[in-house]
Image (cartoon, rainbow, N blue to C red; front, side, top):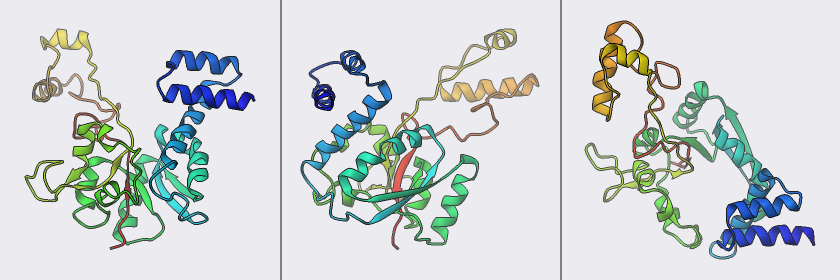
Length: 260
């Protein structure tokens, strides 16, 4: 009976009948914490997707292997693998590597046409190389075919900048997400990058905080030239790895390797 009450509450939230605070409060009264509530929410969403559309059990008993970057998003996904396994019957295995070696692993796997992995994590700009090289597949053929994608999956609900930055036709100068663009991966999450600055240092140099990217570049050059500090520090390092395209950072995404 208690489990039924928990599930009813989660379903009520997913149907916008109660708010988040009410859900957490009432689940807490039933002895369920926030993490467990999140897991149940994922389960309800999984059930909704499985209710119609493709035969999610078609490959039950088979397995897939993922190549993953060590990331908080991965931690969250792994906690919900049970729901995916229940929906599909697939056995999921995976390898996780830290970011400083992860992309070398991806490059090696793709270049050697390895069949070890079925899908992997990537970022937007990497797919502009992998896609035209036919190392990954165009996801449009899955997204637009009801045999593969449930009608309950609302692709257009994904932020436009994320969809566009991960889609390209492979032609120099073509607009991302433009006509004829191929969808090289599925955005999984995104992060916003904020600019912080040392007010005392900028004030001492008579420099106002930057208001746009060209302004940031110009003022960063001045700071570097002063010899007092590096003009820009990204994640505390002299690296551009966090500067990604699009309205926000589409990281990570999932791409499916091609059989070509």
